Length: 297
Image 1 (cartoon, rainbow, N blue to C red):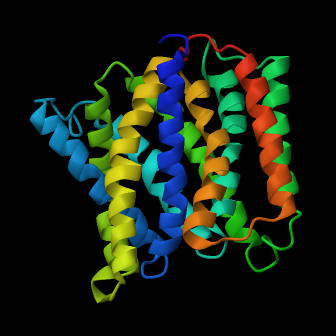
Image 2 (image 1 turned 120 degrees about the vertical axis):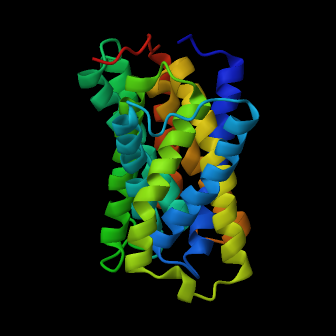
Image 3 (image 1 turned 135 degrees about the horizontal axis):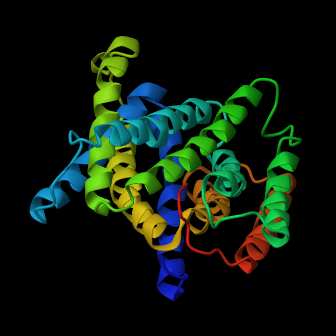
């Protein structure tokens, strides 16, 4: 791993833009598809370009190698569970709210990295930064315009989903010696295999008559926001570490609010703006705390 350079911050910003765009596309997808089907289609379409890249570059896909347990576990924790939970939650909340709630990832990343890595220990500056950013999310839950008794559980589900991304990132460190494309393809394959029977049993998507905009959204979610974005994510994770990569969640609410307003005209309340300001200030303090090399333990 290396200390972050300008190109690393540019890649982090690009990743944030891609993932931010995922939220309003998930919202559009929920107009026609259930959450399990969205998770399946997102992963299925995401696997296609990644596997194609592996075949083109002659990179061996080790999904069924001796390390298959790691690929299967990461596929479940890092893809299946959070994709389902986010799609489930977005059915009843605005997509910009989902983007903001995902900003809890750095808090979870910092706490878990403190216990499960050797060189990503919590310090005062880092703690202040993450807690300040997290306070914005706590404040957001008092916004009765966006969160009420009808969707409070959905908001909590999305908040809970962010933790699985962090756990998946920690698990990925166990196989960080493997090629990025191989890891991404392998976990996508396993996630697809997990969801085929679940989707067929629970939602029978072949009985649906989806709109064209929903179809376009799930294809985009798969090819761009999953396949290409996950390749970029693992590249950043391996090069710069878990906590640096997790800072993408601080940028997601900013871009998420902008994109959801542009494409869906979603409401932006004063409390949303206050929450985002708290997150932005949190970014500054988190970045002030220079992260050293992550080593899993």
